[in-house]
Image 1 (cartoon, rainbow, N blue to C red):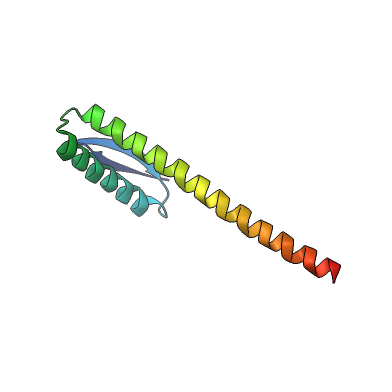
Image 2 (tube, helix red, strand yellow):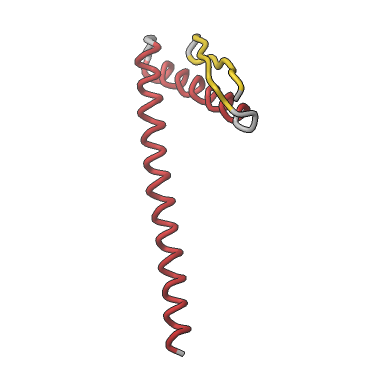
Length: 91
């Protein structure tokens, strides 16, 4: 594990990462900062806590949406495989 510092909304936070995940963690921090700036511009919000709360809510929603979509896709593929196997068993 490596300890890095990421800057989010003007504050540095120490984060333990593996060498393989360091670049992704830095990109994630950059995306949070970018989204916070968009919320600040769109809603004229200056409180960093409010901006970060909105970012957290949006990211949580996106994660739920992705998980649901991914799960539905997997279920559809499993159903198709199951149907294909049923056809082969009956022939």
